[in-house]
Image 1 (cartoon, helix red, strand yellow):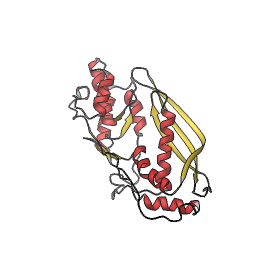
Image 2 (cartoon, helix red, strand yellow):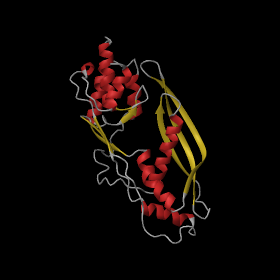
Image 3 (spheres, helix red, strand yellow):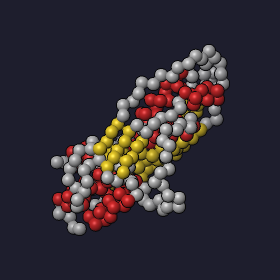
Image 4 (cartoon, helix red, strand yellow):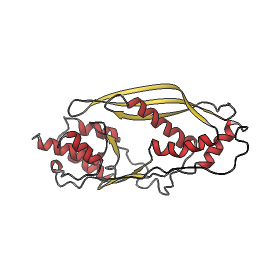
Length: 260
């Protein structure tokens, strides 16, 4: 099986043995709930005559929540998320209903960080800070607001992905959209050391200088802290849970006869 095929199998929850790291578990199951057809109802007689802050408050009243309808699960735990499509699918109808426009008016900053995959392919981590203007039905606007987004890609789509993430962050924060999750802080201890970020783990896992021993240690850390299901962009540009990535890379290096 080729590297791309293995990555695709891991991302889609297919099972392959984790021989490189010992008695590893089955690959994670990935479940994606379909997007709903959302339509907000209720009579509006003055939609074109209200100021922008009133129109924005009405959008907020319509969009009561966006649930984390997509999940990844493995032995490291379960990771639920709500992506850009799910958020825009909920917010878009309300914006159109109340005559509100949300436009990116300036890219305030863009930062790029390069890393390399095990086969030498370049990956770019992109972080953007975007200024947005929210226009109401009368043509007036709220003061400009800002949001940031981060994404990783192996081709030329990293910046576009990061801007989309910034749009998602804007909607979730400016509209105060809850998740319907009553226990969002479960598993996070106050004062606990944060440890490596998911992308830092990813960079270490795909680094050819990382030993099999360290990969086993990373696997243990991911399980202990329930972070194995966190998705990252792997060395071929696909989303893959951290634990599955760690085990796949370990298997690959073990088959290649690399040192322990």
